[in-house]
Image 1 (cartoon, one colour):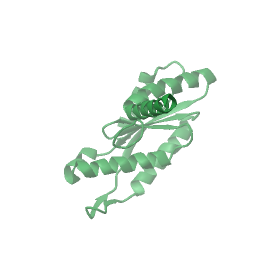
Image 2 (cartoon, rainbow, N blue to C red; image 1 turned 120 degrees about the vertical axis):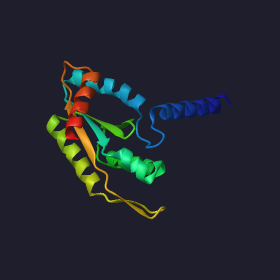
Image 3 (cartoon, helix red, strand yellow; image 1 turned 90 degrees about the vertical axis):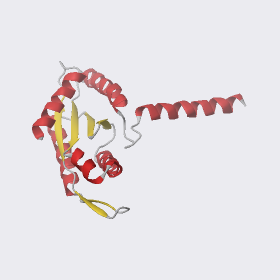
Image 4 (cartoon, rainbow, N blue to C red; image 1 turned 135 degrees about the vertical axis):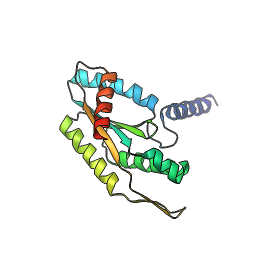
Length: 173
């Protein structure tokens, strides 16, 4: 029937939409979704005069890790980190894979201090996890991350906010 066809089409479209905005490896938002969402979060922040913070998270020495254990294990680590990040945010916070071994988290209605706390929790939880690959029976050790925390200023655009977080991330290294 026509109704059934429409339902199938709708399901297809929503699947395509979510595929277009989801990082296939880590199942969090991809960079494209992030670029769209940061604009929405900034607009909302401006409209309601509510704070907005951004975390940029870079896994330390990840290239060495990939070289030592291989890319499939590197991929597992990225998936693990993405899951840990998802488990450390609430409601309307947004996690995205920013590129390579970098992730971004948008924290709406979060002041700098609160964002620092979230960053510290993530850093702490990551560093306490000793990773191992049960299939390969190898110890991978721990993964550490450098995190840049930036708070949105009403005079800025998204590029400036990202640049600010990036600068702090490099200082954290």
